[in-house]
Length: 334
Image 1 (cartoon, rainbow, N blue to C red):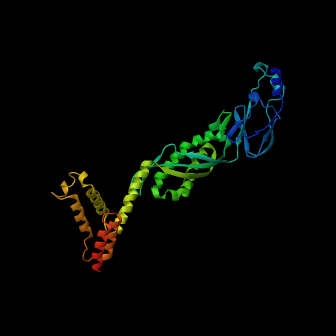
Image 2: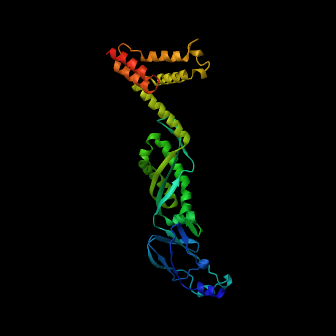
Image 3: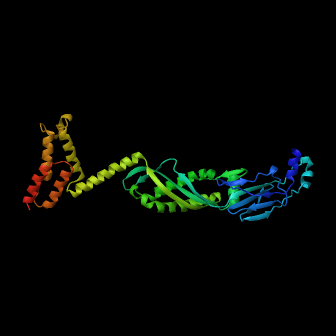
């Protein structure tokens, strides 16, 4: 068996990466003791390239498909037989590292932890998670091999994706902090933000010897606390708008709501009326407040007062019967 291996090592070979594993960026040709014989043939297929490392140095990077003659100082039989003192092993080592030249598409990325920034519209801190994909290709195989692959026999697409995840998160956090986009505008700005992110990440990818060809933010989500806070603010905003349309302030509307609810459950609010006037029931306070708000006012357009009355009806602060009675009073003033 040993003699067979010795003879096998002396033969010039045809070297290729077939089938090419789509999960790998770099793959080293498995040559016994790396003693590639002179005049061996190297086949480069479309979408491939090869880094040649001879005697510990990168001597060539081949990025065009074709068949190439390999020149080394390892001549069949002669070189090995002359290396008796080295147990027939030559120091003329050659490593052939195939790399994927074709573009790597749709690599997923996502935020491992939420991004925190201040929403300038709602004036609250919020937490955002995002995800998407990116595409790239090796633009400087020698740099990528020297700085990141080294002596590894393989380097996977997944390994590179993990290597750039933290960089994507850093740039994304910085981007959102600078853009200061409110919660309500993020979805409409996704395409533009994707372009901004791509432009900023190009320099980071270039450090690896990699060209970023595409970057996309596919979606985003907010944590439950953020959604609850914004939901409450949106409700208050909607109420304020409704109150304004009805001729009331938000504070006035909330006061009437609170008095309405308290009056309905006066027995369960012992002592709540102490600050409202000695001996005065909550129901009486509520009634007086309604009269104060709905009292026809001289010099005020009756139509505006009718809108106020309709708001109180819609909010169940007054009954349909009370609405009709007050409405009749307003119309009589026209």
